[in-house]
View 1 (cartoon, chains in turn brown, yellow):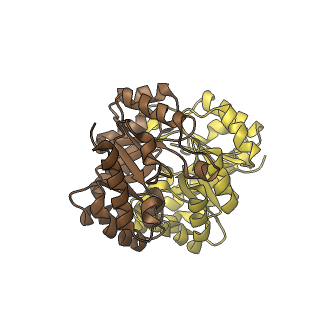
View 2: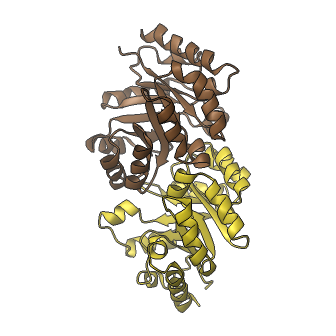
View 3: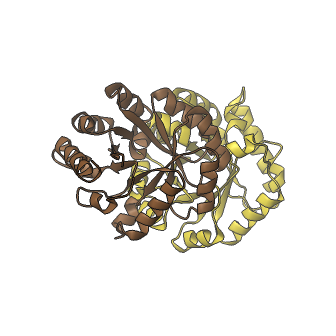
Length: 212
Length: 212
């Protein structure tokens, strides 16, 4: 089984905070993400900074694009993004318009999406999905469990490369043992720690322990 | 019937372009919106600029927030926004978290939302909805019609103040005659014209003609 990627999600309020953290943790991760909060605060400059700081890593523009797919994707690509996120309730024409500009789209799964929709995303050639425990759902007390795992597995069976995110820690990664997760996305498990480099390394080591 | 508001959606690629346009058109509108494209490009500074330029108008932060509702809403409010948009597939806990920070939320209706969801939004006290012809759907040839109007009317019957948007022009406003639309949102019908002030005034005059 391929070793899952480790992705750092940067959702700081300021570019300065985000760049200070990612300079430390970046060397331990495969993918660096300009999170939605950060982009809404600071703009696409956040993506450009990550591209310049980490020319050899995968850069994600987490726009959660819902409309004007062509424009948003072009902006993300021009800034250096390799991947861009789309919200699951975006229409198929919006996703197609985005895909023409930036091929590697990730559908972010929130709320009441359906398997029929997922089938349509595959049909238009989208091969990445992000299974998301909502931050607010986590705050409301929901946790990772068998229900989540079965959805992740079914998405993988449909041909999606699946990223998982939302409250992941060194302790919860093992819940996914045996599942060919494509990417683990960690936010505060890295960015909220005193030593972001050590925190990223601990996650990386845990991934290696279970996926080799 | 109350006269509907006129809202300008600013979705330029740069703050300079957006501010140049809104300085001209702003005096003719009731509501000024920092669009998603603009905020993703330039950050929340766009909202702050609109607040300072138009202290007496309603300012909208069009984040299409999907997660981290509390944080995104706090940032929008701190920047001076009166209203903020949420994407319809955001979860109820996300909407509730946002509402604690910024009371006047607007749910943006994209894709396959349901009437059951709409009922839940009303139950948590959300009283604004944005009925959206997707830009990409318009590009794909879809047009305003009776189907759209019946949805708008049903939302109004449920107690929503409904904004409508997507390809509106001086010629299409009259399709809504007799419908108590809360706000007409115009983008390129104003921002894409040689004289944005005249374009905004023409829309305003057309609204007055049909709604008094």
